[in-house]
Image 1 (tube, one colour):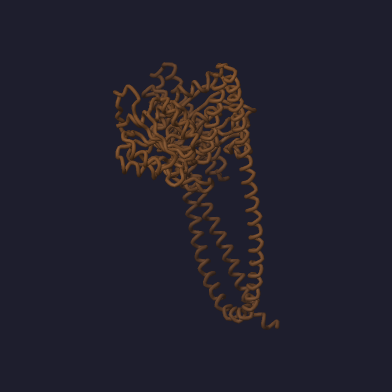
Image 2 (image 1 turned 90 degrees about the vertical axis):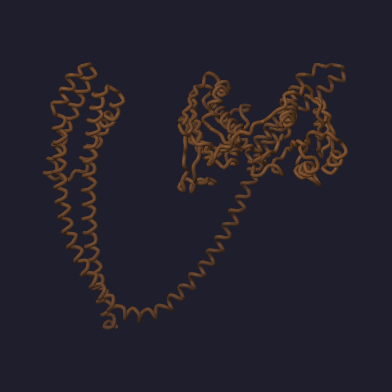
Length: 612
């Protein structure tokens, strides 16, 4: 048994010797290459030091020739950078007497050059330009630079000689490696026959091991399925918790608003029954609460990415310039506002009113974080989010974006607060100081517009919120001129109102009649078509979108087919419908979201009716 194993042991011993020798030779070769690389890097550091000295001298010459202070900027930067570069050169200098001597020469020459430069600048600044120029013409600076170049050339020659010696040694190493490789190949052939004989015996062992591995893989798969099921249940619980938080926030705010509306209306009814007519404050309170409820709904739709958007090609710089007065009035005198607008800023395509709302929301949050005293900076810049950034941020598409950054000097946010900042109804403000929907509205609008929003903040260091909106490619869409008939002195048009909810239909009809319009109403699409055919002179169709049997879009198509030129205004309280796709209004669609005020309805009707 020992005799049978002897060839195998001997073969492995020879192979181990060859492999070990080859490893030693490879390590030697690697060390030589590393040394050569260090020599090159050291020479690059010396070149960098010389470049800094030249930059300092160029800045000094430019200043002396022109008297412009701007030429001193490269001089100062070079002077500030030289000590650090010298420290790096010192740390990389090998303990070699010849190189150390040359480095000493370089330091002396550099010190002399810097002293001459500083002296000429000081003379020039004192008004003695002639003395400064005389010092320049003396040639001390050139002599110092020549001395530095000469010392660096000497160091390069020393390094080149060392590299050549290492290259010669490397060549010898390569020769030994070739010999070792041939010997290793011979050893492999000798052991091949023995390996083939042993492989048959081991094949059975491999089959047994594979079967065991398959069994363990099956067990692992079952465990993974169990864990995935548990994680799915956990995610579902987290979703339900988030829904509960959202529902609770909505119920809390809506109940408060409804309480105001109900109490105001009940008091108004009692006063009217007693013959009292001083109910204006009660009506105002109810109207204000209803408006806040409508605003809450709008913010929730924004967070859900369901608000109807009317995107346009927008120049963000121009938009911010137009908002300056509004921001100053809103934030108050205690907040200093600074805008840094990038030149050549790209255009974006988004809803300009929603961009203004987002910027205003961020500015108000910053004001509250600064306790009405501090500095707010709004900056624009062209930005590119690459694949690396997108891989670490969900829902980000790599590409070019217009970035709007809002920075404050406030209290900042902790990582825990940042993680929840975009959640609806989450707020760190005191009670009655915020709804917790501002950032969630910004988040929803930006995501609905195909953009990205990111918070950078630390406690005590202020906050920066960056909004990225996709760059618009292509020709800018020119604004369509709107022709209006200015001769209309009195409301005379007939409007057909279509609404399946009787109470909403009645209130809308009453408002239009109060505005002076002749109003015909219908509760469904088929009924509306009958009244359209029976009533000549109808100028506008005002229709709800979400209706049974026939929705508002189909009704409008049928009505326009029967009466071309009929004006149409759509209305709804839910935007995922036939005229809004992917959150964007269809082209040439007139839309008024519920709920609306009398003023909003009057403006929309006149806007559509007066359009030629």
